[in-house]
Image (cartoon, helix red, strand yellow):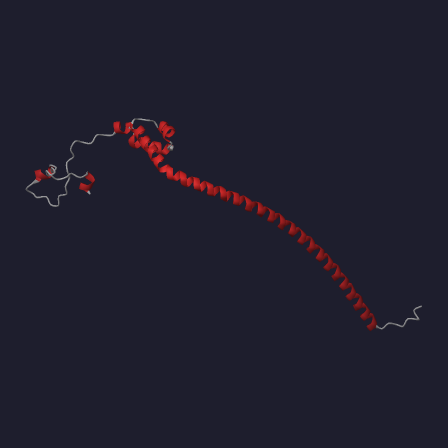
Length: 180
């Protein structure tokens, strides 16, 4: 049976081997290309699904933002109206709180009745409370006026020991302005 076929030469065998290798390589390349396309199609489908979800969420967020914006506009208009009315009312509350603090009201009474914070009430009680006036030392009737003496003469030692009296007709200032 082998006698009918001619003996193939080495060149023919190499050419046939190359042809088989090329056909096999093309076949493997075609399979890889088909798998790559299918994977790409699956990835594109998943990406489109994610984009649709994101777009629906963005639409709902846009609607929510529009509603919130309308509410904020309404609230800002209300706050503008309230701020026009508030200064007179809040000032009256502080005036009432100040009078109550002078009459000896407690911190809790100021907070509950005047609509001020606890810290503000504490400050008003410290500044205007009856206890402050009772415990504050009374200033002396007359404070001697201090003057700055540049030179002391040797002939007047007794004069430097006694404080000088203010001149009649001149206004007396505070001690801070005289000393400083």
